[in-house]
Amino acid sequence: MCSKKLTFLSLSVLLVFSFNLFSQVTLPKILGHNMVLQQQKEVPVWGTASAGEKISVSFAGQTKTTVADKSGKWSVKLRSMKASFTPREMTIKGTNIIVLKNILVGEVWLCSGQSNMEYAMRKYSKFQTAVKGNRPPEDDLNTANNPNIRIFLDRRKYMEPSPEHLGWDAAMGRPLVDFSAVGYYFAKDLYAKLHVPIGMISAAVPGSRIEPWIQASKMDVAPVMKNGKTLDKLSADDGGSGKFYDTMIQPLIPFALKGMLWYQGESNCFLNENIRYAYKLKTLIESWRTDWNDKKMPFYFVQIAPYNYSASKDRPLSNENLPEFWEAQRLALHLKNTNTIAITDLVDSIADLHPGYKWEVGRRLSLVAANKAYGQKNVVCSGPTYQKMKVVNNTIEVSFSNTGSGLASRNGKPLSWFSIAGADGKFVSAKAEIIDNKVIVSAPEVPHPVSVRFGWNEAAQSNFINKEGLPAVPFRSDNPWDKLF
Image (cartoon, rainbow, N blue to C red; front, top):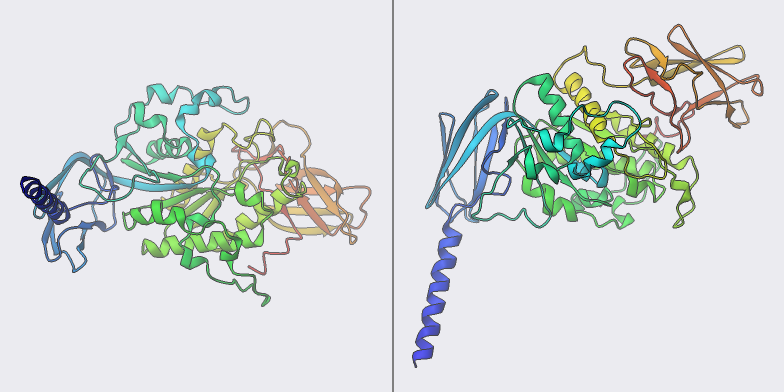
């Protein structure tokens, strides 16, 4: 009899505890101490509580109230605010009270992708052995000391809502060790340009294809190209559609962001994808923008680095599969407010899938953000980009955009990795000279040139740059996809 009473009592205590836990106001993990809120946008604050529970949110002189719906969900939107270095508290009141401390207002970016975006600051020693370019002047892993740069590491098994609010971290000390190096250096350089608090959210998984980052329902489509040809449904590629979206991206929505950074593609390139990847990237960009209710949100991505994909033993690949993938990535530039950076010069060995120049990748992304998202038009943010070609006698005259203060050779030697072909389509290595800020390409074997290519090889690391030091973007004038996407 005594045992039955104890069992009943234990069950009663458990039910009371469960009821109290459910009735508590609960926040998503992205809302926490030390966070940065996006300036000059409405700021959503949301969570769960008991159905019908009255909730109030107070921050920076504002108080917003609402009532949890039948499913226990609630949300409010704070009015847009100016950037502020003043640490402030946010108070969320319901049955319980949550106080989030040390909150700043500034610029917030989400960085996502696979291993090269996940590539953590703990690998700093590899940065120091890099042989090209200027290494960071100081060891940021040990000397970083800017409390106005805040970081949030989105972990796969961490994002479920709970009563705990551990929050964000300042980008220094132990928390920085595991954070994305690209994300940190982007923030560091952007801070130097804008002088406002910067918040970075890193959601990246090594080895991930693009499909897991897209909501599964958005993949069940068969893209129609401009020539009327219909591709197979994107979901047919069986890449685990949606699993990282569901666990890492969806829990962030609708946290206010300025923009998104994407560094992914190696896993899809190994599968010899081109036009299908272009449509997947388009789907990801458009669906994430829809999720955040911002059709114009900046989305900047990295063209993956040179690598010897053709050495893969799993499937037959040629040394042109990577350039075709670069081409597919760049098709996303047909979408507004997208941009990309080339990193063909940031590789010491094409046998290394994870080159260590992450500080420069972050810096180049910050150049794009400064120019495109923040209107600093004096900032040159891209290397020479193919614009058009013209056959002149036995040469091809190539014009470029993004020439900065002029075209140049990085080492003063003749430009490398140009090739031309005649009507037979057989490309041969060509001489390339800079004349009047254009490149004149020719080869004795091709007296009647028709097409020109640059950097069209997985090993191509050309010396062709603009005078700002940014590398020219690989291209082929006979691109078969551009008018069909």
